[in-house]
Length: 250
Length: 190
Image (cartoon, rainbow over all chains, first blue to last red; front, top):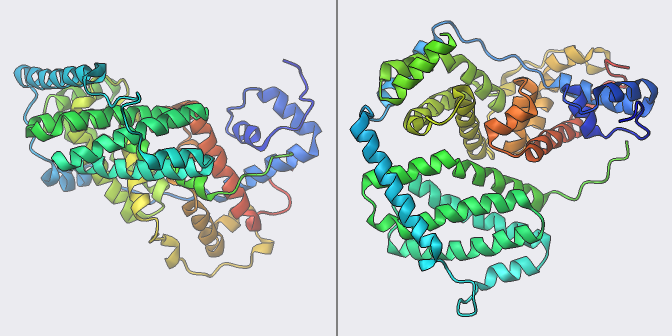
């Protein structure tokens, strides 16, 4: 690492520097001393960030108690997790995981071979370019999200809904592969997680007891999948609507 | 509550002890409200998020066992709730600044700090923040207002480092563009 940065420092790197997270803080500081252009950008960032400070309304010493008093009547009934109950819950989860594992191992996975008709819409969308791919994935994520929201609200899909979930699995696989080919690892990762969850639903829900449904919901919560999908969905919409950013020349 | 007591309360809460959960609620409520307010900039929305976050935490306590840090886990739930709420509020943003009296002097003779307090400036700042995507808003709030490192932002939002960094970068870029009219020609470091 040299003592001098021969080129201008990007605005993003200056943002990191502002927050004390630059990978080369000493070099950036020296560069700012010597480069009026970068110093102006840094000052601009600092001035902008100074503008977004805002006081948070005060909450008194008893606020926590007030929150608890409002919360307590809303809490769902929850049995103490003694050894036997907890072991039973784990057993249900393990049985469910095993059934999914068996399924994933090949018995019912939607085949990619010649005998499997590929859904037309996703193929067209992927072939139409990156923007079309992004729009198609965004739509797919919204449909998947609606399904997962229903599930987390305690509505187990019936047989008809299961068939549409199977379609989602097929679409998801195509989008995941397209994302991988495009080098979009973040998108591919979320779609991979989503695929596993969709497979859970295709094979389990119509026979799930309320307790088993609760276990599936807990697993979705633990994987934070709904949150990831919402975030990715918003990112996709951003990508779809925002023009390409010009290159920084600072 | 010290760390040892929190760990004990957490263990009991996971086992179904509501009194222990009450202790956790009372310990973390103010921090949760603070984060929720900073993400939404609306007091009533922040209260709604506090309530919903603790409800979700209560329902998900069983999945907490393997996690090391309760605060990070709880912050993730809060961020999740805030994202949900911001999404539903997207087309009908309630801004507290609507009630601000427009009684401040013109901007040209103000310091940046005084500008930040002016009604016009605050309206523009609120508008700029509401234009951020939910992810950008969450990442920016955690990095800028909460002072969390990028690494902590990754853990709380369950993002990769690159995604977290770029969410913050995009937020700062958008804010610089939107708030350009408020900035003086020379900043505090010139």
